[in-house]
Image (cartoon, rainbow, N blue to C red; front, top):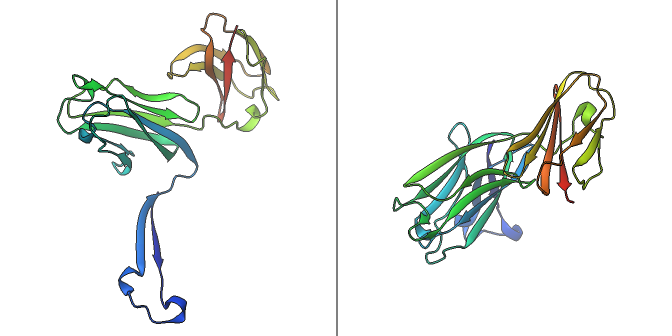
Length: 228
């Protein structure tokens, strides 16, 4: 949540302070616990001084912002790393002139990417004054409950792999394979009592994917690589 850090000093080195006007400092900040790393990447057009952005929570509080940037920097990528708690957020990009960041004066674009490389927000820069996109963060990458300790092999794989759970599922589950654009490219329902399942992902292109397994309140995400 929103926090305020206050720092003050008095009697420097045991003596009289000759400049008491700088004895106190305060800084507002937002703490996210538990937090996830999210990266905002902005590809600028020729008029970076017109470009700003912000990330807000569902109460409308601005948690992070950036810009304006330099002009004549078409194609330059500027990045900001954020730490956000699980939840949903709005990413808003602004153009002060009202012509977006593509394509008359350069080829600007923007992305928000999570720590796994999954693209949460992706825009080609075509808008007018502003454009807002919603994205959500969950406990991806953290194994919980009975799913923790699952073995996924072989990995890397040519498309055929198995998922071996440390114990049988107490209730039916859902298995998804997600590409790095956030699209579900494979989905299967797992019955209760299951402890092992075999997958054939041979129809998918080579690359990196996320295997997402959910059963009740347990959730597990693992990175898998397809290569042939």
